Length: 626
Figure 1 (cartoon, one colour):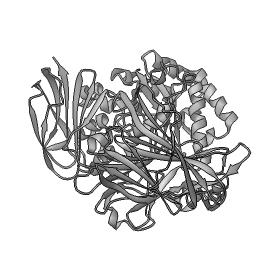
Figure 2 (figure 1 turned 180 degrees about the vertical axis):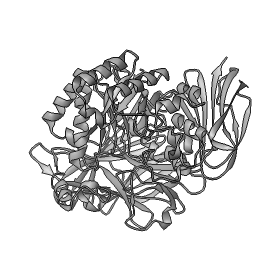
Figure 3 (figure 1 turned 120 degrees about the vertical axis):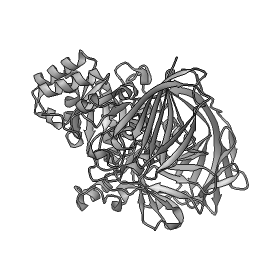
């Protein structure tokens, strides 16, 4: 990996007389402007000289006292970063290229000295607060920074139902009532042709998680879960006393470093989807835990079979061996076991693991997070799984983002990595880029996925998620169901979702018998879990259509998912290289959504594909260079 890092040490100068400081992106098109007026801090974001975030207040408090009002500004230390690194997901290579600054601040009343850190990328801006403190100090931080959007902006958001399992709705920001909760990331289409925003947080460690709440005036206010009990309406199993307890233990010992508050600013959906800023804002992997980073040998991207949503027989050892054998027939890498495995003796678990390993299939087991909250018991459990040869754990029911839960996440990440265990985080909060720091964290749920039997309308839901929830990272959706759960989508739409919803571990909802017997099997077997390159084509529209061109090696895939409205598409193949390609094509059967028309032909990059898709329709092509 080529790495280049520039830090301009010892460059200090006072805030200009105008009380404004501007951090520009490397290409100069995006600016974060920090202002101090009357001892109060505000910020504005510009793209090509046009406001994409209007002047918004920066608000942080300690123990109930606001420290971002009544301030004196100090010195600025500016720096730049530029280096490449490898990733697992929509593309295999990422670049961190940004300008930044650390600005000293002093609260005049209390004398609290702290800094605000700012980074500007070509496609994002980010900021965070760092408040020094010694290990004997225990303080309770809170934030209420607002992000005010231009009039006429359209936002896609959902509330905090079932801990990040709501359904996105599109609304003019001018019409969102005060008090409305919005789970990050929130995606925004700016008025005119200004582009898109996505608002979330990165590097969430040692701190409570953040959600947004509308102020009724086009502003989304940051709220921390521990200090706002109203943010717990989805946690039905938590009593009022539980919420009060979580609030009391939310203090931070020593230095307080907030997560990065991130605003992605993209000219189009392709730039939005491919933005790496969230990962860039997280540290590189620990060499002791991950000596080769994401290429560390025991971290293995793959596809998984799963006996849960689509029948498939009993919970016996014999049946789970069949699942592993059928996974191997499809070239899949994992077999996920739900909680029934807890009733098995260790010799049965070891028998399944050994049987599966002979076919290069790893076994992942489900566990409730409550069973991992005691440090000693957790470490013994991880050691047991390591001794049995288990590949990973699917941990469920985290349920909230109070600081104690965020601390639990990080303990699990480190201790599982020490035992060479990969992780699926189910019933979890949104990802914040920590899969870069802990590449054994393969995927978070934080989505209303295929498990939701009550979701009757999948077509618009599944064409919204690539541009909303998945901006934060891959989602454990459980792709590709051929039965009633697919609702108003076709078989081909479902297969295309496996490509578009790529993830380091990609769980298939359909049981392996139904995959093996489906005429789409050859395409399914060829879809990799992660890609070298992804291009979101310009015909895509949030909630209406998702059209992705994706490359693995020299092979290209074109995947189309349509929403509820019948639409026609004209798709140039100019993304292809200078080869002649053999193509394998899946098309909807207009007479039967539970069927497929398969064809093959030759293609070149000079051709144009014309499609007409009905409600929930799909289309998929694999291009293999001759």
